[in-house]
Image (cartoon, rainbow, N blue to C red; front, side):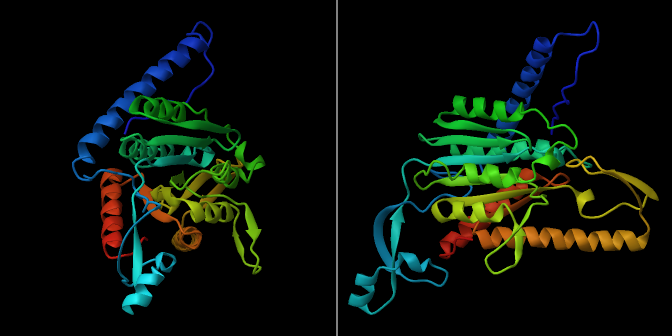
Length: 336
């Protein structure tokens, strides 16, 4: 994975900001071209089909009926055929000819971190590139909502590979939020996901790419606490096929045994010194596992597909395995 360098103020006598921006744009172009080549070479050959979306929609046009199988959506029951044959049947649907995909890409300060092959930000951009290249064909459109924790940018959905490359270029050049700046706007992820619900669109695909590490907690109707982004994600899943791509780094799951470790919270800028003895490492691992389980539970409750990508693994292989599992599930009549 190739990383983009953090943009900084030019020193005296150095290139102008315009020249710096041109150089960064050229670097982004090179990265996107390599990503496109890697994705099309490695994924196109493995994921063959007319529609290569990671969560291909079932469509809205009515098709033939077939017998009900465990796991089928009961909302697609064909009651006239069921009454006539006395055997439960479901109505199959024909896939829409065009698919509109919207990306919600979180590039907040917590993703400016990585201890393995790349930063989480790099992996999020790679995931967005994979979704874009695998869905933008046959007139399909790709749009995006991008947040860096401070600002929210909406990029219109347009068809064609050149438009998709332009969109990914703008995603890649999203400026990084200053350390500690995101904490003042804790609900940024919920706001970005909710932006996909406005204005209402026809049924399509929505992909949310984030580490889902936010402190904004709300109380649900039953009094239980839930992350603020769960409710807009649940609302999004009512109308669209939703895929949540969770970005993680191995150091977020366990601490190394290195004595006293200085850690910085990128969202708030707070600095702490932690003694990494066995007791602290075990407690940290348990808390991290509990946190990730809570995130996974919230995604399942919202009705979203869940794909986890880690900075220390082969993300292309992880995507292939996920798509293969989804297709096997659909062939057995399940959707998740």
